Length: 478
Image (tube, rainbow, N blue to C red; front, side):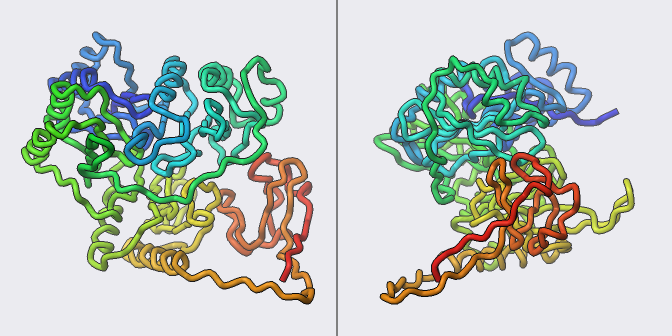
């Protein structure tokens, strides 16, 4: 018999009602649960002993609260609502637009859905199956599809109107599968949606993780960010957080993809009460910035343990990590967000039998965590070597980031054209295979010649066979 179970409660858009959350916490505490975690999709997670589970389930069934046990058939909806106003306000996107969309998605979708302001970098853009990104045109959204169990992303050719997102998502529920052809979906989709042509790709900002902890001013009020080094908070503390929110007329608690909380709208007269509450439970709110830049998996402490192991090394040497974030993947199928990815694998494997543990290090293209292109930079590291190699990546990134750009000189005489290395282009979706970078998602290492690719290699975007890719040469001025 399993000793512990994971109980999940969704917080759509990362928004919790203090009253409802307080009730959930009270039921959990009565059943013997002592702490709560928040997941990378902004959901609420509890680890419940099998002896406590029947009592907790019985209590939850008397409410309207939907929950899942040891499964994620209805993934939580991620949104950048948690950072709205406190980090950045979009040109037209406001809190009311988020609520309008979340009301449309009350049918509890089975696809992962992300709602993002295009100008922020606090929440991920492309970790969902349906990724909606606010466009420059008011009330219209870019739509990027990612088929389940794949990394291929397809931009919908049209911008979608805010009030159509729920209906669009419902139609995609049955149609967006791993085998679905994206263009076929577009051509056969209901044409009654209010849309506009999407004439260009979304312009995403350079990644920069804001400092999301502690008391911070915005306008005439303050917001409070709460982070836990071990990724959990005691139920006793969270219950008092909810009660203080209710007493001071704060109507929402926001969860973030960084497994933290943000409480907005704190009046100046109430700050002392919040400071007292933090002191009562010895909550530290000024961790180092490099400690806040980590993503770990939801249902294991192994990633958190490795994070803290590397963190201690960073603290000792005072490593600068500005502009980077780090993800730790200990399971092959998990989704982790990061510009530097630490991926665990067996040292040796024979069928189902494995021996030892090593780690591979990857960086994303241009160190942007929203890129789906991974480049392997280290292979087969033992745990003791991982902190030093991650430190090396940080130092390389920092030195390149601050190198002065060379001054471009315009010469009167013509200079010969210099061909770029040959790349191989898919004639269907125009995706390139570049031998310099390989294809990490299909385990093709950098430097692999096109002729050396396995026969089963396919285009990572539309899955066209290798034989259809065509060699092209781009010419640039020397």
